[in-house]
Image 1 (spheres, rainbow, N blue to C red):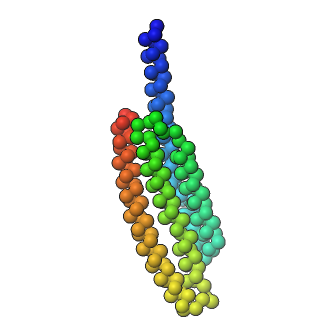
Image 2: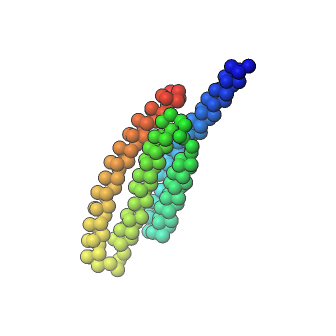
Image 3: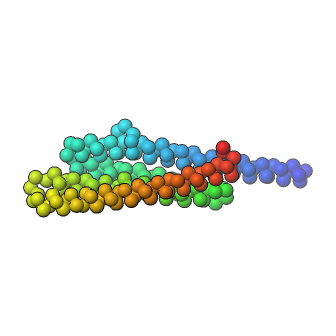
Amino acid sequence: MRNIFFILLIFGLISCQSKKVARLNTVLLHAERAVFNIIVGKNGPNERKLKCIIDGDFKCALQAVDDKERAFNQIINEINALETHDIEYGNELKKAAISYYDALKQLEISDRQEISIQQLSQDKTSTAQVHDNAMVKQRQLLNKKLEMRQLINKKENKLAEIQKQFNSANHLN
């Protein structure tokens, strides 16, 4: 009788474990799709931002960037809320995902600076000095964005590596 109870207890623990693994995996897959929709999705915040900039509506463009930031924060908070301490490579995967999505968010919200620079450069009442300063700031921002993209690539590679370890350890291959 004790052996049956012990076997049922172990089976119960394993099934709870696999539910947590599946939940973590599901949330991360959802996050990946959500980020894709934010950045390149039809009628997503990034597309709205671009349309607003084309129309010269900088207030609308900044609102779209705010929407992007809120969407990223929601994704990061959802991942952060997951319980992972008893999942093999769970904490590592969670931290790597949060780090990656936070870096991606920082890149995406740097559009605020780009929008303000574009606004300055398109202002017909600005002096040549203001336009020149805007061009210098734009070059600096482009260099900063390049550095941010390199950091994102590193974080993405680390996330992929930990995801492989997580999948292997939790029999998700």
